[in-house]
Length: 444
Image (cartoon, rainbow, N blue to C red; front, top):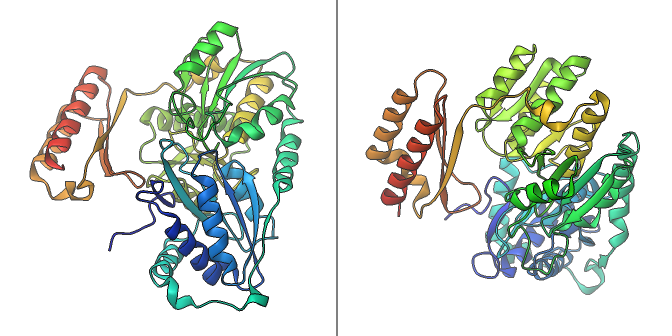
């Protein structure tokens, strides 16, 4: 039986692959394993139309086993994580497919500390989902209550505004792209608390336009807006605001690796980077590693997924980690990726140093890197395909020292992901196209 949980919860096309019956079973499984009768579960969602359906199903499932459900409404994923970790709740479930297309949705379970579950607990919950009818039910007097409580978001809002108030952003002009997602409910207000002028784009969600030609996965319109409006910096959230991609005043994209480098170098210079360590995934650019090591720091690599980044941070004692995609974890403020907090930290460095984003980013020169996502029905079979393995070995030889080839199945989509890195940009692009094409032919 195929595993339900990927690298970031359970995802699929809403009402086709991911059905409300599964959300109902997840609500029951979570109540049974993590909450208990009389305990509280907090549930939130992004702006997808299917979100209401899944929240209702989760609430029905959890209350059927006697758990109480507090429904936070439309909130960023990091806000749900923040709420789950306040101590009032035994667990949280976020309904969001993050950066995925609008037709997708996802179910992400968090523990009482606001953290993603260990793999072993996910496996237990998965088994409970398949055996949901064996979990029984409770009598009418013990059925849980489901209450909509939009005021829960105020806790997150007030905390982040407190962080923003320590930043002297007066005079700065910011363009914020909310990706028509849940970050739009609080992001503009929080960034404005720095004193900066904030202009907002893509903040008119209609249930089907989340992430469409906008946000962290498509920052082109943000780049144009920054140039046309003469702004100092642009920030693009993804659909649930756990990612951030920045844009400098010229409209040049500053990705997650460069953002991590900016924050790491600032902390190294001030002697406040715990263990002198930055934790990144295997996808992060070799240029980031070189810049951090040249400044006296160390880079620790983990598998892809912010859950593994956090585990690497906890093991190593590092306080900063993240991914090229824009997930950034700053442990002094949050235990999850939070695009709004990341934006605040970038502003903090800019205002402290008195330097524009382009100048800060130039300190982390990136090696040429290309990534391809190949639709693959048999994505997990690539390691047994001799032609693909031979192409990878040949590519590594041609790239030489400093070159890297990374092939992995997506944890959230039916796709194989190919990453090529090296010193010759043309060769990197050629090899990425060649391996991606071959994989598409062999795995479909």
